[in-house]
Amino acid sequence: MLTKAVYVLSSDLEDFYFEQLAVSATSLAAHNPEARIEIVCDRVTYDVLIGPRREALPFVQKWHVVNLNSQLSKKAKSRWLKTSLREIIEGGFIYIDTDTVITGNLSDIDKQRGIVGAVKDMHQKDRGYNGGVIWMRDCEDAHEFCNEWHRQWEKTRTQSDCTDQPALARVIAQSKEIVTELDPGWNYQIGHIGTIKEPIRIMHYYYGAAKSVRAQTDQVLSWVRALNYDSEFMKAAAAMLVSIKMGTYGKELDWMSSKSFYAFTASKRCFTALERITEIYCAASKL
Image 1: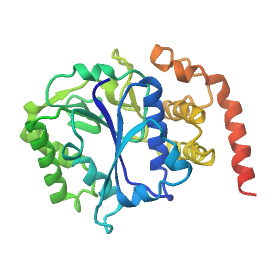
Image 2 (image 1 turned 180 degrees about the vertical axis):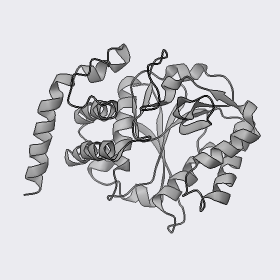
Image 3 (image 1 turned 90 degrees about the vertical axis):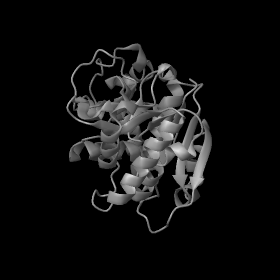
């Protein structure tokens, strides 16, 4: 895989964004051991990556640390960085949201043609593109596209709760010929699509999640933190996060029958026991 895999992180000890990233990046490295993974974050975030958090991602080749206005919220910082990625990262890249699980080999992205690629939002043809996974070539048009995205976001961030999606939609409307539609498997937004023919490569599990699903997700991520980012547990956690959103949590995961899910299905019989062990561990750690 020649295309870089890039994440953006703005986090502290009060949230689970780092844990999301750790699980996603671990699953990416498991399926794509040759991939170059780079992370872009703000200085405040990087300074709290200490102890086990600093050691949790040995396969990350580079951290890009950017000094941002300390008055910005975590959400604003993450969107500032996301809409500025083309000016930070050298070479072609595929940006991936942290609330994802990589379920297969991503090397086919090297064959992608065009300038910018994304999947339709909610997998509906009449909607815009979802910003959770974006492929971008390193060329002048891509730089102009990303710069305009950042400008549009800066102009409207106070009216749009700092989200980047409205700004992305406006930029695409101005330059439709630049964006190529990717197969839905590159950003499988669970809950918005039925069976698809294309291979599922990236599962976007948090998108559009109900409160009950978010609560279960946070529970799994809390275990990731409590177990000090154990690499084997994070692989199992990846399967748990997907199964929660698919409504199969704690049940047989026979739907994961494709080869791309081999690392997860191999551990499915361990889920019940693993949950019990982590519950006991977390309870004991509070004593």
